[in-house]
Image (tube, rainbow, N blue to C red; front, side, top):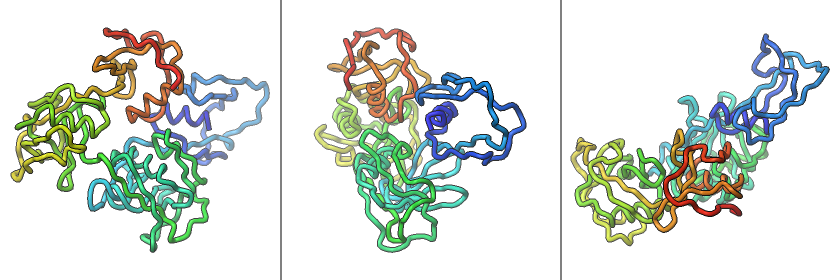
Length: 371
């Protein structure tokens, strides 16, 4: 499984779901690698793994190994009464692999072996439901309940999911093997998400800055900058867990958002727990230009800079509203797991030392170890 983890990571295909032996996907015609691959599981590429050369081997193409990765690229919720209730859906090569039946709540289903099937509630706790909700961007809390009646004729694919608080995706959580369970018709899992799911920041250099988008009236859209100020920005930053507001941006500073312009003249006192609790005008006439979209820069607490994406780069932390680099002494895999989890970037793939992403310009934090 450690070898499989490296392959799925290298291909940007999520986590291993199943190892398939005996040339499950057909026999290849080329050479067979003689060396025994012995990955530790944290390598970036399969070629980085140690190998053990065997003088004699009897492997034939009938022993070719196959692998199914989760293929995770992003969840969504569909067919719900609101954005934070419904069917969890996982996108992979434009095909849905995991879903909730009603947006951010509903029956949990997975797509496997060409067929949609249920996830069962046996041993599932609110921690598991919360991992799903956070990964979906559907808030910071999930509740789980069994169904009272059969919702669909689906087979039952997965059972006994047991996530821990440090898990960042459902696929990191232990479960029963695919298709092996004792789930009854009344034990199909239903999940309801709640929390800060109606605001997000897009187009920024970190999860704590960008154009403001809100979920309102059944769709995602932007906020017109009329009346937009630091009090409004402070509520957004607090709601997203991004520290304090540094600035309230106007005129699509981070670029235009998606969807329609939904709100205008937002008036927060700064003490509200959610942006939708503030005074606001709903935009009745669609078609406003995105050139007046509102934006926010939050202080945040950690970010990655100079990388190839939001999930790679030099580690910087916010101390007293000043971004500082982190010294690589004592920085270990557990520290990296905390950073990746806080940034909603999954699990760490590799730690680079020695200013791999160029040296920072500000102060240097003395240490970050012992997370």
